[in-house]
View 1 (cartoon, rainbow, N blue to C red):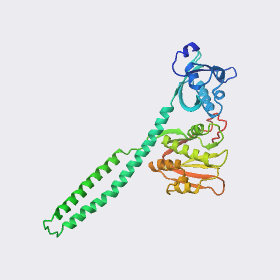
View 2: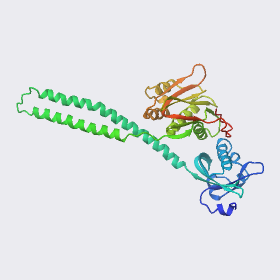
View 3: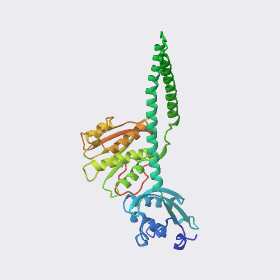
View 4: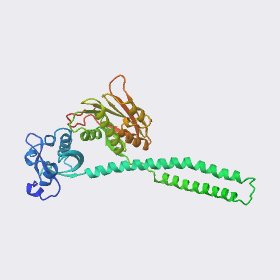
Length: 364
């Protein structure tokens, strides 16, 4: 097998890196091309001979290095999406690992290419928000149509009552009654058409399979780059609207970080199966708890300025998917507890022998 050299990968227009197993067994970077250096903002002297965990200390590098180990072990092509600090900002990158085998069928080198997927990730979240808003509008239209259809029927019935025993004196009042009945009938037809349209255009969001702990870890990587906070989440696989759950958790995590009143917060995330197709998610923190307006709002009250506008989007998104959400301040221990439901199901618990290296995040 012929290994790729610097001259070859420099011809590639996408960020490319090479990995090999060092004498001590570590998977280290042996080369990077100019496109990779421009994207990451790092030079060869900062990367060559180091593992991904050493290049990107903390969760970013730990996750990337675990994928590198998996590729060397499986000897199969693989891809993964990961949030990485590139060029001074945290961006979404999709990396493809292609193993090159020697004559004995062992991995001698891995060729990795990375593509910046931040724009696509932002577009996906925007689409989800648009779908949520669209669903809310359709729900409002449906509710309004139901509410208006009955009064229009009553107006039509009242015109019939007015017409009974009515003596036409030729002063145009009968024409007014006829016009009123015509308006009520046409308004009812329009309301029926609007209701039919709202019902026809509403559709459920697609579900995906994913790991709860990995989803939480990805959110922490973005919100807590300095690794001052921790989370506890079971290694379970779910099938649900992953993007919706990600948006809800991200807002709740961010809210806990901002208003906990502590330098370091530990969040505990649990998921239980309440019905065959319904998940109940709880998020508990050990901070100072919610302000009373926020608790009241999440429990169905009206929004106030001090409720927290991020919670408005959370409640909207959950309710648009047929779920409910509530919050409470804990009395026995410090902190608060939020519960909400979303459509979905628990697929399985991940075996305990599945391991990875994450320094500052605990998962059980």
